[in-house]
Length: 233
Image 1 (spheres, rainbow, N blue to C red):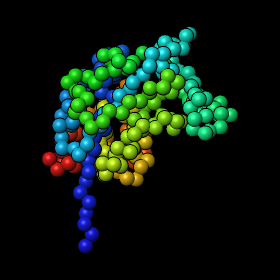
Image 2: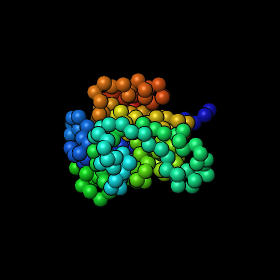
Image 3: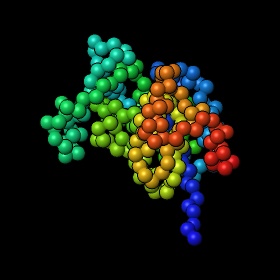
Image 4: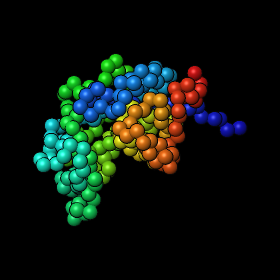
């Protein structure tokens, strides 16, 4: 008789920082997600992780770093040559690897209050904090890696070391960092990836991200009550 493995449940809280909730780049209705996320953190997970944007001043995603470009306008960014070289990749490919970038207000600048977790959340509630967007020339929505795969966080390693079977994701913004983190998470066979919709807020109200996430193999859990059912509490 084969013994069934007990689930190892982990929580990933994406970018619950002051600038994204009440600050310079607040998502619509941002404060309303604080209590659901707070309640979810208290549930019996084997491990809890949080990601944070941790940008230097003048980050490439800031409109202020692109004179003459409009706030919330678009530009094209390219992988920095020094990182391409460090990865042993062909620098001649850089011009073909451009990506569309929204130009955001300055946000989550290293060491500022806007980069801190929004109260009452605090870092000692988590087993690890994943910092992203630290290179001035690289945007990074996903908590796993940047879109070119040049800078990879230790999140995958942490989840594997813990033996995670189910990864539950909440936070902001649903159509940017939550979505990209969940899509990257779903690429790994080691665990099943879920998003708890009650614990997510998005920039857009259109809701297109949910079909994209389902198509990527991400499970959608609508409510905290449904989540509790899955966790057996």
